[in-house]
Image (cartoon, rainbow, N blue to C red; front, side, top):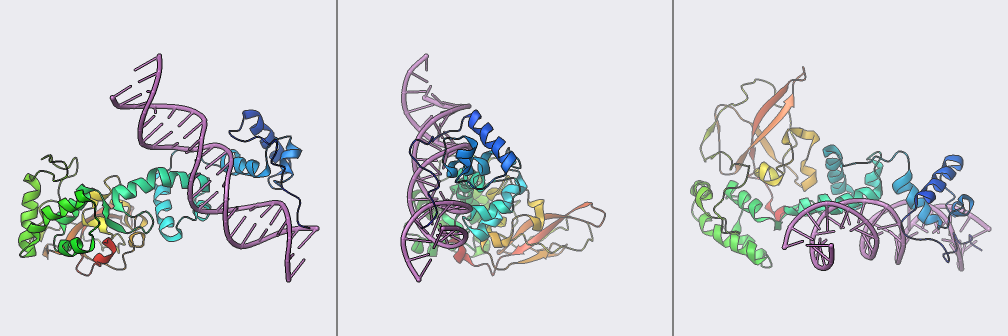
Length: 316
DNA sequence: AATGCGGTCAACCGCGGAATG
DNA sequence: ACATTCCGCGGTTGACCGCAT
């Protein structure tokens, strides 16, 4: 014979826990410790099954549970761990002291997942997807990097894109003809005066300015004015093509402790510190980062991210 | 004030692997 | 070795709340 049943389900209470039930459970566990969930309800005088008691304790009553909103660092950790572990909520929770798997799962589904979708990131694969990207992000991406976004091939491969997105793509497409140099300039010029194809509004993007008219051939100033050694950064991700448009709430000064390329499945990238003679090309983009020197002083540096070798496959 | 709607989250459900007799 | 149950996990549900109409 196997074990005896954990509990007789008949006559057992279900639903929300009453304060008196919580008190009984806490008092019992404080005396006897958690575990033995099969016999615990009877011994503690609870009309609940052991499973219900275990859940109540592990997800709510445990004294080491941290309450309140998730911090930025916690959220960042969840995203990074999820990109590696997937929906292994218990494994993620094990790396976040005071948070339960249930809490993390709920937070993912109600907050993080939606935000990733809104920003065009597939919450399952963590790769950017054009068909999930909201229109402003798509436009920003296209305008920043016209040479990288092969819209003709996208149209062929993304036949199932939603009609609204398709309309935007076809709007942009004519501007992609001819040299990329011209298209970059014309897109930048058009951006400031064209109405938003999605809404018909001619309003500018709120709060975040379009990257400061970095034209092909522009020579970038050495804005840092510092001769500090350039730290190796692992910041590259598609959103850095136009960082503020993708994650306006994220502080990119987080540096390599922040979002990294693994999170988005990017294999490699090249970055070049901006010097007084660094030319802007059609496949590069500016990235601003900060680091700390040996005295703990914050140093800002501009990088030129060369995206020639970027694999666009991850966008589809 | 009533109703509808969407967001949140505690709690339940069902499954698979581990444990037990 | 096998049957049975436990345990822990991920997915889902539904009560509750705030807000808009």
